[in-house]
Image (cartoon, rainbow, N blue to C red; front, side, top):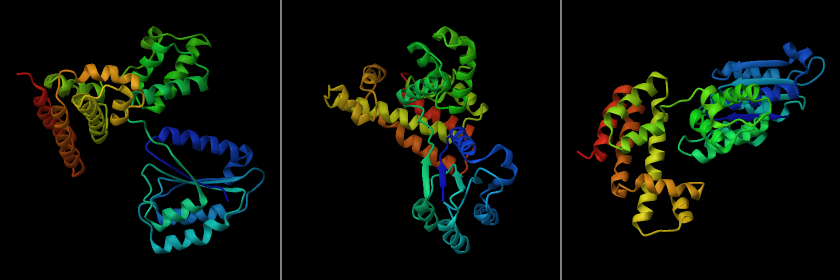
Amino acid sequence: MPIYLFWGEDDFAITQEVERLRQDVLDPSWIQFNYDKLAGDAAENVIEGLNQAMTPVFGSGGRLVWLVETTIFGQCSEGLLSELQRTLPHIPEESHLLFTSSKKPDKRLKSTKLVEEYAKVQEFALIPPWKTEEIVQRVQSVAHSKGVKLTAAAVDLLAESVGNNTRQLWSELDKLSVYGQGKPINENVVASLVNVNTQNSLQLATAIREGDAAKALSLVADLISRNEPALRIVATLVGQFRTWAMVKLKIEAGEKDEKAIATAAEVGNPKRIYFLRKEVQAFKGSQLLATLPLLFELELSLKRGADPLAALQTKVVELCRLFSKG
């Protein structure tokens, strides 16, 4: 009884994994009989999906039932839970039942515990934008899988350009693959072919740290106009300022070991501490820490329904004042 639960914000990575599962399970000649994709936010669809999973396969290959954006991991009625308890242990070996959700399953719920008892659970999380070394590693890994040869400088520029956007990374590497034809690609080629996101949340953090309110407000407007989720912008700012604050506090405490500083600041590559030292050299640890309460206030106001652009603009001005030299 192959059952799967894929969850996380990286919808492109989930879609890729689902496609691999489709190819492994289904016979192309019998897809119309053995493949069902249902919206998982309605109880009747979940029940229909369970019934379909119990239906014998037509022809050759296996059966795949996909319940998209399933909500049973956030709330589940007693009646639906009973259906899950009755069905999941008895799904035939040739049937594959897949649940997907962008939200983290609530492990306290009986429905979540039940599905996890039978399912292969896989998380597809976006790399936090401030974890640049992990993004670089992702670029290297995907480039290798696609046979795209990149110089070290090209890897760094591509990582900076696409950030944690998995969909764009794959798209840009497809483009570079066609251009390179197996030959090494340098940063000049990447700069000419890749859609570079020159304005991002990390640059916003830098503008705030420099006390440049005009530039910061311009970046906010650009990010919102490109439909960057406000809460994701805030999460990036929190991560970046927390890293800067922890690095500076450890330096102020007299710590000289870069590995120890990296561990405290949750920086994966200790070599990055050299650059972080320079970035925080002109500031106090208390100054950097003072950003976090303001950012948490911003997060709370957004979750309560505040207008994203107005809320960000107001708080960004406050944040810039912390670093203003005037």
